[in-house]
Length: 343
Image 1 (cartoon, rainbow, N blue to C red):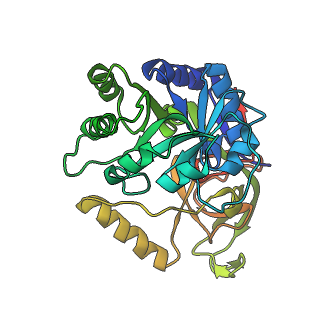
Image 2 (tube, helix red, strand yellow; image 1 turned 60 degrees about the horizontal axis):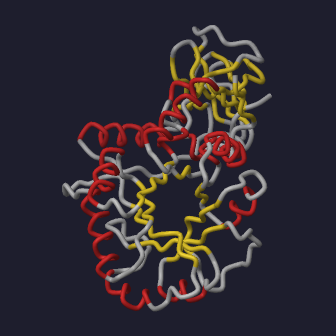
């Protein structure tokens, strides 16, 4: 049986279409595991939405999607001199983050990334004069700015984008299109009003595909229910059962991303206290699983296996029957579901 993602298709697509309509010129982003859906499925949804450009993470993702989407495919990872050559169609757009890269891609479609407060990649204001002379023969699709999600110092994302538009115009560069990430709809409208000759195109992934969380339900299948007595050993590490109860063998393990967690930014006293508490419990082999039964999130009996997880259920709780599906709170961007069911 499987780890499944169930999707209320009508509700999910209604949300997608509302985001599309609220962000004119939207460029749907699909990368990595496809936000839990798989990139091919998202490319097909983008075709249904009627968009003309999608954005992917890597050239390998672009090569996979080229047969599932007929429009232009923007590769977000900047071009690197000497990178592996991946055959891509003429409609592929490469991101450029340096003057040299622009020179290397003569004849190609490119979007030029501008360095922002993210400090991740992009040309700098000092590069612009040299850049102007390096665009001959390049098929310029536009410029891009990728902004941070948080603004702890009160930095205004609209002002940061506007500053780049003004710099590019002052350098006499053709700013007909600006691709932007992490700017709200109201901010884009303000930018469009300030700079009517530039088209602002939002690149959106998480809010588009995962914005209606209640339309998505993840579930793991109970494969077996094994009674254990207090002190009885079990599992790879032969731990002792803490009490009489049952071991639930549930679909979903490390190969799916279950039990794996990316580092998080923690702010505030309460979140930090909870983090310390979780770390303390982990040192005595007590870790909550993402799976719930009988109204409670259940503990891992031991670390997840590759394909399944072992959960411990106390004896006073009536266990589920094999074949029952347990709801799971999973991070969609790191989970590989066995199947996605639209219904």
